[in-house]
Length: 203
Image 1: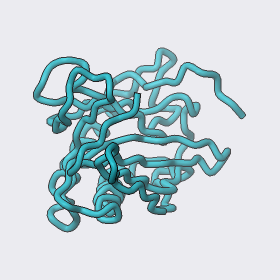
Image 2: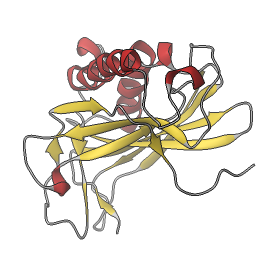
Image 3: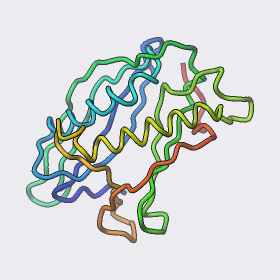
Image 4: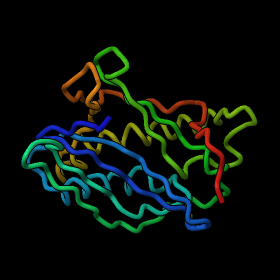
């Protein structure tokens, strides 16, 4: 089912590529905004990433573009989808864990139910020496990334201290969801276990 993006909201996709093997990844987020254009929304996300996440991400992981789909996503006059190039790399050199092993971040709201929470997969943050054979992350890394993710999501809501457009993160719903209105992300939680993809790794 397609995700519904109402007026005043946007779906924001961060597209990544690992330069050592051209593997592609995407992190899908969403936000509320007040009449901000796609480029302004992308600027908020890019600035927040550069400030709070880029220092911890592997140098081989490139944020190639930010795709902003502005609501409404349905009706006779849907909003635009714009691809904004970024082409910037992480700043933390190291040996990454296999590409199907990523940092899992849970998004929470003030409401109960599965529809009112979400999760994101973030590539390029899990290194070989930070995860054991059972997929458990080093607690020190969990603590550090928890702080970075809290700061990143807070920066979206504050517009990077009012330097960019205010874009507080929200949870959108698909057409079949029992919930119909987006809800604000009130907290995030870095999972102590890696997030993994079940399909096989392709060369």
